[in-house]
Image (cartoon, rainbow, N blue to C red; front, side, top):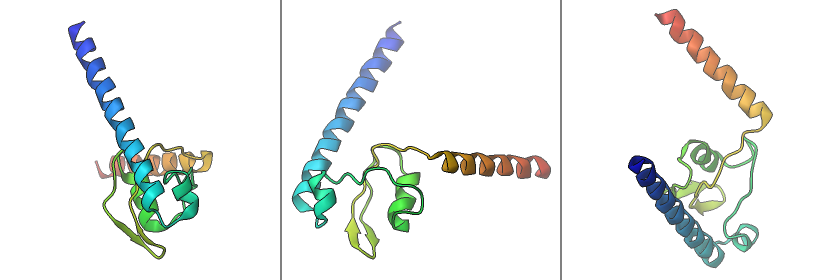
Length: 112
């Protein structure tokens, strides 16, 4: 059982570190953001459907690991730093993703 305990400790430390980074990001967003709406919420953009955000932000948000801070992203609105806290797929997006996955599996099966 010592392996389980070690893994639990590592997971707990990572969770605590992620929380600290999130608080720092929130504090900096409140202080430096030029967007009054997101600044007042600590940079939180809330959840958005695919296609609602600028492509640079959206591409990063859907591909980056949760908790990772982006490099500087440039959009028509200016420059941004993005930290993905969480992702939720709409039913339609989940369906599209599943269909794409099945299509890829079908193509791979035909190649073999």
